[in-house]
Structures are given as C-alpha cells and as structure tokens.
Length: 191
Image 1 (cartoon, rainbow, N blue to C red):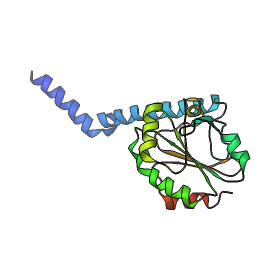
Image 2: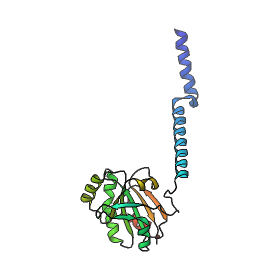
Image 3: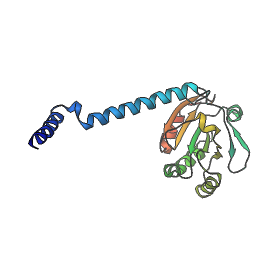
Image 4: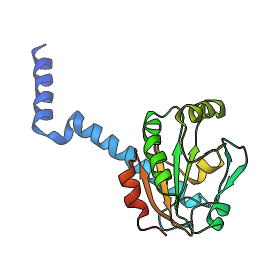
C-alpha cells in the first residue's frame, strides 16, 4: 500500500514540476485544435460561397419582403435608385441588443435622409418580427429575410451592420450595438 501511495505522490510531483503535463496545458491544446478547426471551416465556407459579403467587395444581391408594405426590397434597385450610401442592419425580434439600438438607428435615419437605412430580420419568425416592428416603430424601412440573404451575409451574432458606399461596395462591417454618433462617423466618408 505504501508503494502505491508513493507512486501517486510521484505523479503529483511530476505534474507540478512540469507544467506542460498538467490539465491546463491539455485543455489549452484542445482549445487550439478547436480554434484551428473553426478557422479551417470558415476558410472552406468562404472559398465555397459564391457571393459572401466582404469589405472591399460589392455587396451580394438580395431580395427581402418589406414588412410594412409587402413589396420586395432588392439591393440592386436600391443602388440604382440614387447615389446614396446604404446602411444594412441585420436584426431579430428575439435579440435584446437589436431592440436597444432601434432608437439610435431611427434618429440617424431621420437626421440623414441622404443615407438609405434598411433593417433586415434574419433567423426570425415573420409573425414575431411583424409584432416587434409594430412595437418598436423604426423610422426606416424594414425587411424580412426568408433565409436566402443569411447565406451571403454570415455573422457570429446580432446585431450586425453593413455599410455600403453609393456603388453598393461593402466599406465596413460592424457587430454590436450602434449609436447615432458612430453611425455618423461611419457614413461620413461614404458617397
């Protein structure tokens, strides 16, 4: 029994003496493998995608339903309509930060009629989102995505905002809650 106790004590001493053999190091190794697999998956995903929204690239075409009027909102039509930059905010009714930023986006839209502001519901139910829009009363156009747009505008969370210049090229992508001051700064150079 005492030899087993000694052996157990030796293992503990060796773990303490060599940090590369400890459980923390093993967990770090697993974490690195998971991160590497995720990066590889993202690279494969992006290389197989025909048209993924990326900074410096033309924004992928999309068509979503206007939640208020029911007509289609088509990106190419927005770009062709005039020379205004476009702010596309991806949101959902179940997303508290999305709800929080609507007053800021609304104030920005009212103060900047020279910018197209478009909110698009992704990963949401139509009825829940329609109720959300009724309650939140955004001052800008809001559309509903059935899922096709989501393939070309992938995100790791919501809300996400895409800033497009007047030619429809993605200039910036921002994940998180926006305020009016940040929006003003971002569109200052778009034209």
